[in-house]
Image: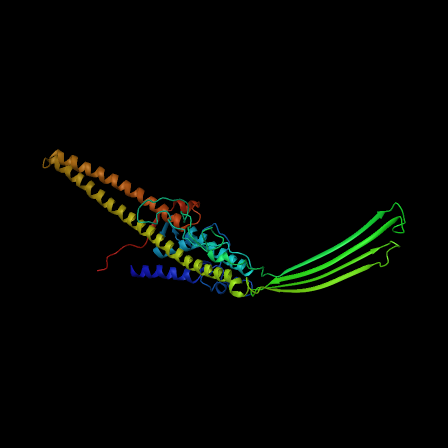
Length: 388
């Protein structure tokens, strides 16, 4: 029993070391951008999630033998960590928090990120039947990091000046225009058909800095040529270069006020990171509850089966005694009634076992449409034992 608990604890620790650790074995030989293996790239405890996956991991098929699924507690925990939608949904919050941090570093306001747990997995409570539906999570995550009275936009520290755009912006305008205009008289232009060519080449660069400094560089050029004989200068060339530095001296001065959203976004990322670990613990706790409920249902069926065997044997013995005249007929009626009661109890227990098997499949499988998985009864290999 203690060994099984150690295996389950080791499985949880493995997931806490990397949310995509279940893919490390299959992707060990693959490379990632920048070199290395996926396991090396995921050294952080909670890196962004892998691309969406709708199928089950191979571990689930490996548990099928002779049309049955032999499931241990550690296998149930690992399968839940690989396939359970609660964890898959929460992994998206890590990407959202990283995106919010990028927005803050670019000078944009925060959107906020959900940090509430996705809980109430069907069957993951102490009662036999609980509300909910769908594989894995059944309740919407509540609560959010960086959420104020107005929702997932700004907290009360957003009352200060809005930070300037910290991303560099490069602009350019290239324009070529050719025009031919018929003239009613050549008195003004010196020609009855005026041709004019206008070229524009403008370039600009602007960037804000966390100190409250705004830098703007512009380089504008234009060239205009015409065939008018009245024009003194043709072509006309104009060029201008401007370097502008603007520094806030009071409101919006310094990295403290301009970088407050970056600090908040980093804190939100840490909150979501801790919430993800809490989601793992919550999901594993629910899976263990479902597993032990399955074990209890399995043992209850065996107990009800033994009770039916005993009452059936007692009824048979009573009939023999009735035939030889050593037992009253009323006792036979009572024994037959006990057999019927035990049969009813066994049917109820078997129905509960089938329900618990469906619950555990739903919690550990991402896709339950596989006919083999849907039809395979789940046999728990761990039992509750009393150590002498």
